[in-house]
Image 1 (cartoon, rainbow over the protein chains, first blue to last red):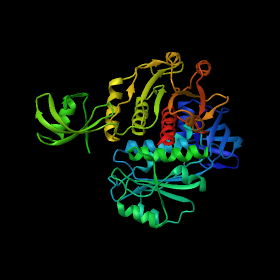
Image 2 (cartoon, one colour; image 1 turned 60 degrees about the vertical axis):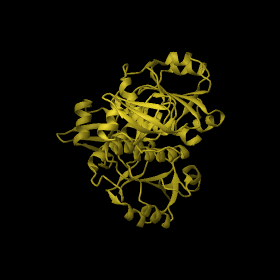
Image 3 (cartoon, rainbow over the protein chains, first blue to last red; image 1 turned 135 degrees about the horizontal axis):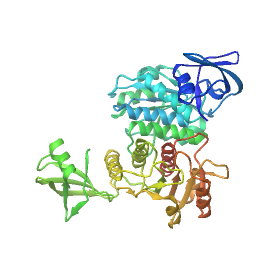
Image 4 (cartoon, rainbow over the protein chains, first blue to last red; image 1 turned 30 degrees about the horizontal axis):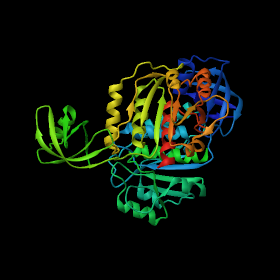
Length: 233
Length: 233
């Protein structure tokens, strides 16, 4: 099943625009009367029929809809420092979407080397991974945000920070049973600074360990998402 | 700490060859008398001193050695069908080494699209990931092997196959407590064939599920390695 994406859903009519329209009618050669499957990024899957093909869009009628398509039973926000090599961060994003994630906050930290992020490119990766893994709910991708600002925001769930300094740390498997709304922060190649860790702990963030191995940023981030996914699914 | 790699260890002398020698003496400009850290691929880390630099190699004396450097307390073999896009398989290999793995068997399956594999390139990725994640034990990389042949080999631990067909499946977390020697098979983009699954089950392989999400081959493989890693570490 190939999925298309559109946020233009009104009165049982869905419009595919631009790239989605081209992929549907030109690449896959779908035509009037054909049935296509469309996700809206808000959790719904629509079985739809192509009614009209115009130059820049394609109009479809809704035959049936499935709410909460591919949703998960936890709420996960990942705050991750983008890696120097952008492929690695993008790989994390793809894997996070495949497992299931709600919000991604790329963070700017004391030891961050990457200060700029191509959000458009990451949005495309999110969309492609949603289609691939059959999910209709689009995770929120935030702008690159100072970690200090993240710490100042109120958060309703359990917030955790993974770091490599000495100190008391818990395994995620001990934290997850208490709350299914979780936020996990993963630092850059050079780790969070000691000051950042202290500030997080002062804000009641929990220090966590991801095991004995020395993991790259994106590996630690994927490990954290997979821990949450495998605990709740 | 930068790690170098050499399998030439005799009588308390270690020789760095070719690329390792060049990286040590040319890129990092290490010279006679400098202390370097060398892994031997058999679990040992050596603190060593450079004694002589020749055109093609570099001789070091052993100051101290640490056995079982970066080892893990399980034995994991992953049988994974290489992905059409070789980056994806390579990413799995890198992540598997970072978490900790013992053997990688790339498998040729009924639905495999990739029939050739650049083992040299993958060996380099393994080595680089070992150095990055501080592990001295080199996982064994097998040649591309027919899955049918893998099924015919005796295996001392618990063998598992992940597939997407209907049927009784267990979570890895239910299987792992019984045995820390595990082999897990992950199929290609089009899954194992039903015949392959039947053959595996007939050989007492256990069917497993990796959760509700529809995961790509390399994502499923990373999820399986992380499950084992996080259970035992």
